[in-house]
Length: 318
Image 1: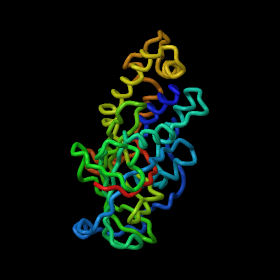
Image 2: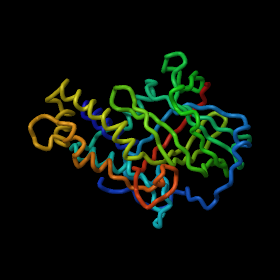
Image 3: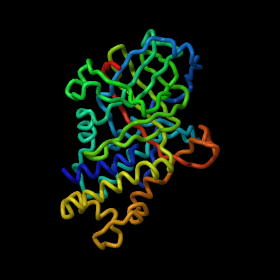
Image 4: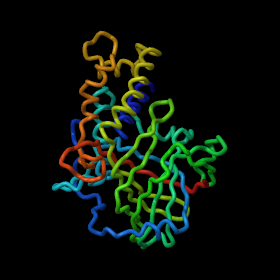
């Protein structure tokens, strides 16, 4: 179990969660059918509100393309989802063939440690222009996670989270596609500790929303190298250091040492951790999503690591 929990920790680092860059064919999300969105019209519509009941990480190679997008619209129009490839690489390098990362994420959602809220403003849910899907970080209004995912959960919006994570677009045949890049913040499960909030840039959403829930949804975007180094790596290093101190000879600790103790002296320094092949793979950007001034666009320099995750949601009140 501790091996599994640690792998989730590093997998979550990559996620948000290989030397193989995500690639593949069409995912059905090409932008040939982009509809111009009137923000004021979209914002004025009635909102259906949700809480995410499942977050699907691409821990199987078949899910890389399924959950990814062509984020950078490059000449190959390949699907960008380095997250999945990194998770699979880490699991393989740790010598495990039965690591169930997905169950750990599921547990964090069920326990209320990860609460992601959403709203969809629409009048038809079938074919419609000028709609918007918004995401929030949430907290449990009654501190009882057992009633969160049955369709009657009560939540509050976390004031420390972003209030402007809006995905404008339109729907056709019941499928919503955002048509403008957005920024969003999601939480990642780092073993049993508090999840880490991570900002995603140039993000896209595709989903099938109704008045009572969301199915067939996926969220894709990029995490900048700066975000990974300043927000994620220190948290991961603290967690693996603590695990080794608590259980130095356990299977999880031994797997950590195999990956990061490069001089084999039994201790992992922060330099060894950050300069390891695994972390350097994580930090190697695969998509160009920002201009030199930090605005969304392309300048020919890859600065972000791509990710794609799936989700479903049930009705929630907030």
